[in-house]
Length: 155
Image (cartoon, rainbow, N blue to C red; front, side, top):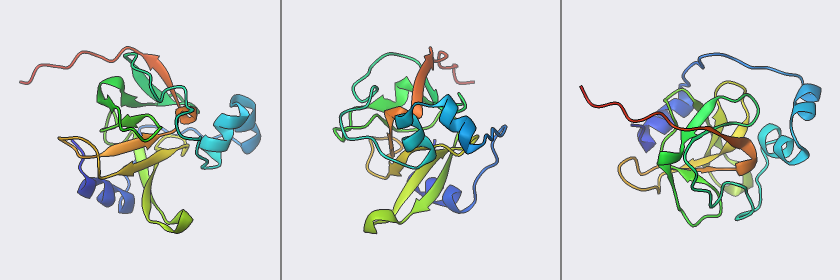
C-alpha cells in the first residue's frame, strides 16, 4: 500500500511503466473529445461536480482515457465531497507517475498515466485510512472498463 512518503519518493524517483504509448498531438486530438484532450493532454481540470464519475458507484476498473491502462479499482473509490472522483490507491505501484506541481501558487503532486503521460489529477495526503491518500481524478481522464478481479486470499 502506498503512503504519502512513498508518493513523494516516487515523484523524485519514478518507476518505469510496463509499456509506453506515444502519439502525436494530432493523433491525440483525433482520438479524444475536446474536453478529454484539454484535461488529459493539456493538464486541464474539469469543473467540480460535473464529471461523469463524480458520483458513480458501478463496480469496475477505471482506465486511462488515452491508452486504456487500468489505473484505479472502484473498490478504492470513496466520497470525498470535493466534486471529483476520489480513490485511495492506484491498481498497482507503477500504474501512475507523480510530478511536483507548483502552478496556481501552491505545491501539489500531479498524477499522470505512467504509460502515456496523460494528466489525471492530483494526489493529497488527506484521504481515508489506511493509506490516507486522496487521488482526486478528473472523469475526463478515465473510463470505467471492466469488473475488478476478486481479492486473492492471503497466503
